[in-house]
Length: 198
Image (cartoon, rainbow, N blue to C red):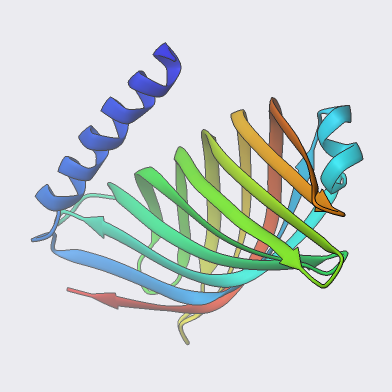
């Protein structure tokens, strides 16, 4: 519980930093698509929803820097959709933290920080109904290389030591529920376009 309170305070502090950077002199905005693989580590969770869950989605990232500074602020968001065993899941995740710029009109954007998110999904047919819910918090990073043309490619990794999983299934009017905490992580690749403003 204390870990969640600490993460909440850090999240508010980072949001305050974001608003203080709204008038930054250099802003890099990246839009693209990504493919994440979510990996569960808890054996009980793996038995219920599987070990690896692919999550393709849409990525939007902001990096802002003051004049003559290569250290700034990073904020991004992912809307992810996954489908497995007739389940349709919708997820949202965000990464907040510092940004490091190497280059100018081409180069690297490196962004470690706090990663948070949730996932909701399930299926409903004539005989079976199941529901999946996840909330996760931890640390993550994204490494993005952008070219002069604006094309960019990124790699991300997130580790979630605070993952709560809810799973329920209803068959023949009988409901079975499963809830557990676990460690999980995601790895992914992003393809997009980066534009910069001064």
